[in-house]
Picture 1: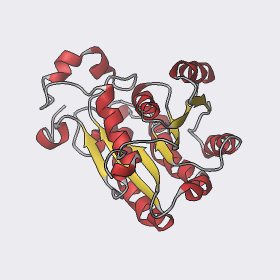
Picture 2: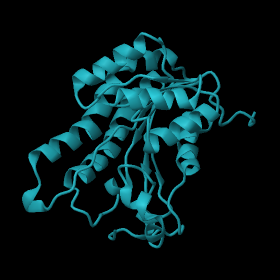
Picture 3: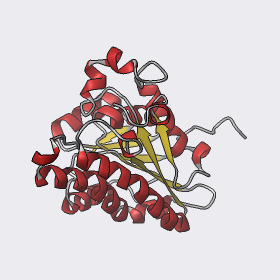
Amino acid sequence: MFENLFSLESKTALITGGSRGIGLMIAKGYLAQGAKVYISSRKAEVCDAVAEELGENCFSLPQDVSSVEGVKALAAKYAEHESKLDILVNNAGAAWGAEFDEFPESGWDKVMDLNVKSPFFLTQALAGPLRAAATKEVPAKVINIASIDGIYLTAGETYSYVASKSGLIHLTRRMAAKLIEDNINVTAIAPGAFASEMNRVARDHADEVSKWVPSKRIGTDEDMAGAAIFLASRAGDYVVGSTVTVDGGVAFAKPTTH
């Protein structure tokens, strides 16, 4: 009964932003649990190289998903290979920092489009394959990658980023309420300090960052993969609309700092 709770054998997953950072951590975790994984990212050479490195069960579908046109193109590419999709991870994202008086419209639109608009429209574009994979007993999964910056007040002036991640968390709930009717579970993960290109502070100054994390360390690949495997596997089949915070306690213990 319990031996295969976290297995992803026979599952197929698509991960946007899957060639680096948190997306890559999740891809490695899914592959280790037996899933067939498609990774997508904007840079084709990088995406192709990472997929080859990850092995025979990983496939590259490079695509810029910052526009609805790009989202539809990725869905069409996926449909050339598969008719069903068990797990969609909406991970591709962007950030922008600037002082309040100087914050540009371009920095607002780029972040909001990629972080909020694209997850919605990619899920919409892939609703057919998700519905085809889903049953009441074995639901399909959509996992949105949010951030603790959408939960607690950060010190940085990343206005569009915090708005986008907070919006994505609430969008997750709204999407979940609708798509559970089709046996599709929509959830989210809110990561804290993980070493990545987007979080260069955690990547380049892990010891310093660890001082203000209650767990006294930054997140590891296993921490992120573990949360994503939980939500994608049988273990997470009764989780609907929730956001799992994976941050070592920061959002809970440090609500107005860093």
